[in-house]
Length: 104
Image (cartoon, rainbow, N blue to C red):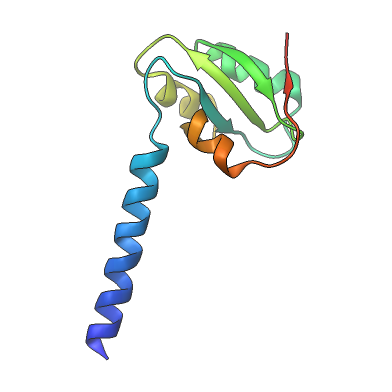
């Protein structure tokens, strides 16, 4: 029984590690950010601007955005501005279905 628990725990750890490595934001490339539900598009745009980024796309839900920042610590700045989750945008596009629209 202990072997099964160990194997399941280790498998979960490996899968989670692989996910985090694949989704880690790369400096200078677009990132996908998820902000708390209930924020308006203008509040999310202000948070992205406060982090030093430029809004590229807004999803069907204004809490999910793709943005670009110039600093190496842009992902950390998004977390400080209120983002709940930040991943590399190319990885996030693999997981997202539905239409995206460009913002101006």
